[in-house]
Image (cartoon, rainbow, N blue to C red; front, side):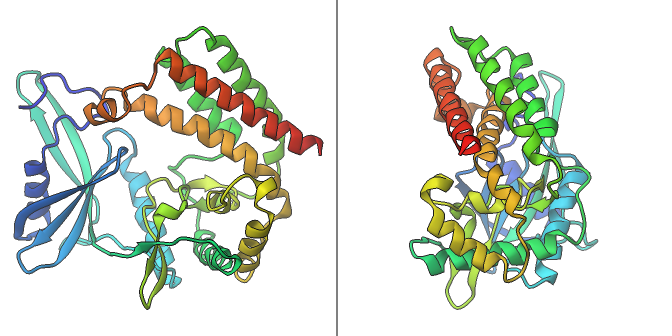
Length: 339
């Protein structure tokens, strides 16, 4: 039964059957009726199979998250990567060449409708790349370097700009306006965030911003037999410093990952030059990602799957731990700047 009052940004009105019907209608496919949900909390991602055995991934974007222009920029980035021989998965176009489509659903009792943009991808399998040797990190660096060659072909005008002033401050304002940060230390929480933003903002001055993957952790890199490494899930692409796509691959903090970082730079600089000033941004970027993730969670507070999975999110204990983690990250940043 459909919920009577779906919340903004939720998937309450998207059922598996509607997802199957939308894919069949747009792409003229005859699906076998099976549907495999994938563990994505931001979007809804399903594996579907055509009657002829071809397998696809149907990705339904979270409502109100991205504009059509922003989604087209994601697909343009994928096209640029593919043309530069960077292994990625291109979206499937319909007969008119379009890759972004819209499913409109309606809750009659509430007289409310929700639009779900969606895209179809061919399914690509592979194992997650488990880097544990320096040569593995060099391979990762080479992959990111090749991707950044393509990234620098053009800018994105409708995506997040990953700097403290343009993105992190807006996420902090969003959290403050949401009224969700409620615990005994809420003033301390926002005081900490303001201090760190003021501290790290000057570090970004003069740093070149470019298109970056934005979420290039190992879970988004597949190792395909006889083909090598493949980058997937460009949903979080943004404009930011190049090092943002490297630090997420480190096994720990910069101070504990010198060998791995050096190996990645060796691979990366076979294709692109990394501004050495960007190495100062790694721990600030980690702090910024903590805020970004918290704001992302706050936007999903009304989503049934999110509430079921993260039942403790937003409790006093949750915010107390968040504050402790932010204070610890502030300490790390200050120690690095004083070194």
